[in-house]
Image 1 (tube, rainbow, N blue to C red):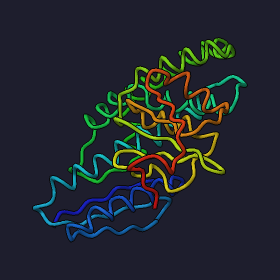
Image 2 (cartoon, one colour):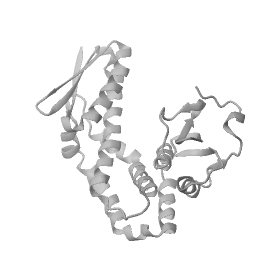
Image 3 (cartoon, helix red, strand yellow):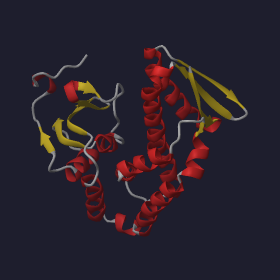
Image 4 (tube, rainbow, N blue to C red):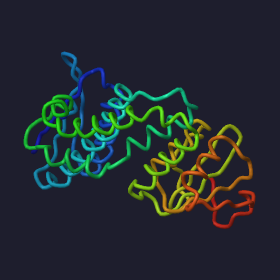
Length: 255
């Protein structure tokens, strides 16, 4: 048997829970065991698998650690150090999400390069002591944004900068469809799969699309709003507006 533990501070309970559920879902399919316990301000996720499964399980653990650092830890870093002007909330959430995803592949490379799964990992210690170059990289990005915060006060300048950031993100999805419903939006990705089971709010729809960074976006509604206007400005070359009602769209299935 190969045994391993991934440890997080109790203050990161929600992240620990997300990682545990992801690992448990994957490892249970190969007859491995995942448990967790909390002791002395740490949550330990304990893994036991057969020797033959080490390579693929280590790869999955690596993916979980990389995503946690490049998404959860980076967002906390932005929240702590980024100084944004008093602009509209939709725009600022979108701007922060664009910074989160900016040059993400390099972020992931740095994490993987420094990650050693031959011994147990304490996630916060790994981040603070092994990923200083990554934090310095983020510091440069934040510093540049903070130094130009007055530039963001202009609506036109803000949109130009946000569009520049979005245009330089890696494409994550070939095509998505955005549908307006009472109370929010739904995003459908490849094979009409829902991006989220919950309705996406007006406040979060732009940042959600930025997360997916699609090559093509189909909008299935006529209504105009601050969020959809911003979407059309920053993704204008990628957007197709469909005036058809959802029920008339072929091959569009909602359960």
